[in-house]
Image (cartoon, rainbow, N blue to C red; front, side):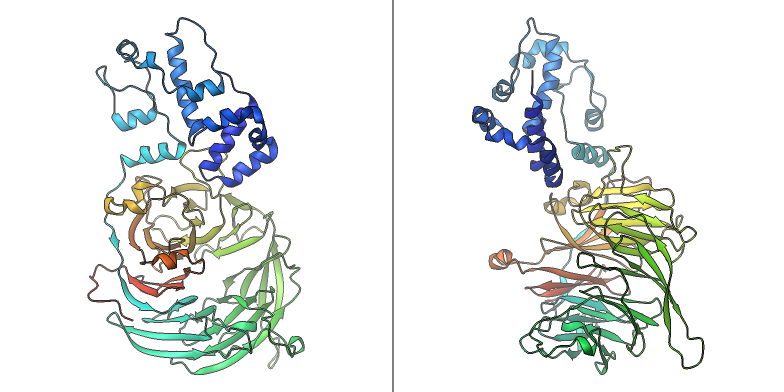
Amino acid sequence: MSLTSKELNYLIWRYLQESGYDLSAYALNQQSQCSEYEDNSTTQEIISKIKPGCLVNLVQRGILFTVAEMEATGDSELSLLGALMQDELTNFNDENSKNNNSKRFMLKSEITLNGNKNDNDENNDVTMKDVDELDNVSSSSTSLEFKAKSLIPQISFPSSLTCDWHPTSEVFAYGKDDGNAIINAIQDGKIIETRTLTHPNLLNVKNQINIVSWSPQGNLIITAGANSELRAWSPDGKLKNIANTITDESIELDNNKIKSIIASLTWSPNGKYLLSIDSKNQVSLWDGTTISLIKQIKNLEINDDSVVCSCWLGEDKFALTTNTNGIKIYDIIPPSHFGGQLDIQPIGMLNGHEHNITIMKLNPVTKLLASCSDFDYSIKVWSSSSSQECLDLNINPDKKYDLKVHAAPIIGLYWLSHPAESNILLSISMEGTLNIWDATTAENLKSSDIFGNEANFTEDMKSNVAKNVLVFNASLSPNGKYLALGDDYCRVSIWDISFDKREPKDQVKCVAIHKPELSEEDQQKVTVGICDLKWDHNSALVAASFNGIQSVIVSLSEEKENGEPTK
């Protein structure tokens, strides 16, 4: 059998496309121009014979041909077209061939599936599987049994863009696209009290509330709307202050266009300060009690293509990303005399990323800082004892089959609490790959295609197994035991992320899932989707904000939900 290099590249290109590896297929085509094979008029007959899975089929046939070659009496040449048209090797299927080959070698996957075969086995054909399938097969025999349930909404509330729970009580707030934020108090699974927080619309501009954020102490809630306006409210809904990151000099008479919106709010650990970043990368430091502006940080060397992210390293220290793909550390300096003003000074720089940094997370115990980049999906862990050296994760130099590196934007980095280890880092990416790392040694402890691995679901949940699921939201429970995910099917799934090295490395148990009932009309709308996920302080309730359909609160507790969802 002979193949030209262009034919082989073309088949690999087709295989990558069929498997959903569009980026790899694009890179291969850029280097080899293998797609030009389709433009050749002499190859149309061959192309018409190439079906999905052709490459795997040919490799399987290649193994059979190799075995059959020892039995063949003459040489035969097979072209690509001939291999595609030949359905099977009939001389390999007769009884004599079976007997002669009854003691042939076995693949590892066959041993795993069937144990040690004896001479009387009826089917000794060599079976080829993709790498992902081999991983799933090898782990399925030792997969742990567990229970799972379908989540019924305990409470339903209107379509919303964002949500947040009070840090110490069963009170949640959500922001709507009509300029209002709502605070709801819950008791016994029902809403018992409601407060409305209003942002006025700006002429012809729809004032969407894209951020609601409770302070760590729970004595203040911040809402953010159009034109970078912040409003501070008491828990009972009383307006405390109005602030804006846009200075008076920059406010123009024409307010028909939104100049910027608040992209993120981050509180210092005890709520002493508040950092805001708007869509123009304007970073502002606020007093966490009065929401009065302390200082704006202007010299960040940020251009329009960069997105700033922040992370608090202590009550008076924080980190910001820069345009040069670095991390700049700032210290808040108290006033030198009574009546003086606070100052902000840069005290350090971390360099190592080659592309924009999108997430930073501090380990509150060991003070390790984790960061990741969207473009190359690199993950780095920085130690406070060194300003330059870092540990690289999400790499697979040894080409281990049981490690699935992230190949899509990382949407979540979380430090996990573990009885034996203090530097355990979880990463989850948009294509549904979940990894758990030892951030001290760079060892990968768990790696799973969470929606693609059947072992992650109970028998009655197997219908949720799917390839090419996009994960949009991730939220770690306060007790560190569960990860809530929201995907492009509008599902809310809860995953048990506890791990033991004796467990299958690729198994992450899906313990609960909520699938909203979508009408055919809603399924066709591109505006329908999940916007936000948040856990309550007891790690028992998950609030999910949906755009275009009803938002919900689901309960992970074992208590049965009675009656209809609360409106």
